[in-house]
Amino acid sequence: MRLLLVEDDAMIGEAVLNALRTAHYAVDWVRDGAMADTALRSEQYDLVLLDLGLPQRDGLEVLRALRARRNTTPVLVATARDAVGDRIAGLDAGADDYVVKPYDTDELLARIRALIRRSAGRAEPAFEHKGVSLNPATHEASLNGQPVSLSAREWAVLEPLLARPGTVLSRAQLEEKLFSWKDDVSSNAVEVYIHGVRKKLGNEIIQTVRGLGYLVPKQ
Ligand code: CA
Image (cartoon, rainbow, N blue to C red; front, side, top):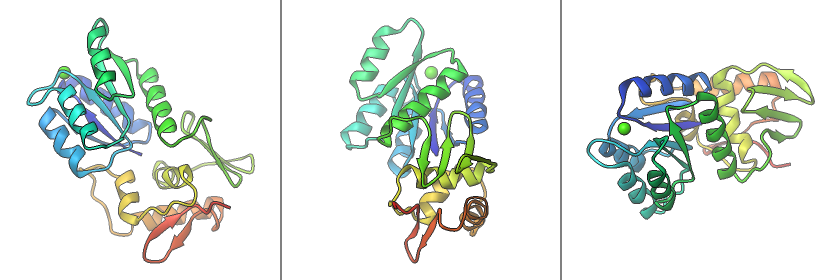
């Protein structure tokens, strides 16, 4: 899953970035509203963590512009503890949820998981399909009830495919889930991690769709 972190405070941004990366997310971090706007126009994210008080362009403005483009990316706004007015304005501008600063990391991660889950149309916390289970909260994977150890990047290619069985994702789309701007991507990285997933969970779990990409079969 790929997240956009919009935060102008260097210390908070650094801490959140580390927490998100530790939780296996690919993260792009921008520090002002104009950069956030540019990033949201050019990339597809699974979630945006949006600070409202930003230089260049206010967070609310960025959010309103995003929704005016009919972009439905889940947005979690960050506000100060006593800023009830900001929270209401954020929700009314199209945010899906809010989190108060200073962040409680565990709560932040739980809210992110909940929003991503909801945006994929799921109610249950774990992805379950054809005997494979992935629990984003615990990072536990299993096959027919037996624990399987996946690397962070094997997880990152499997999760978006397992989230929507029957939907084809191209190699480029999977690369976006795996890496943020700063990473160096080798041309066969996605194939390497898919190979790893197949070795651990069986060849059938991810199918190659020639010329298009990959999918987890529905049946
Ligand atoms: Ca700020």
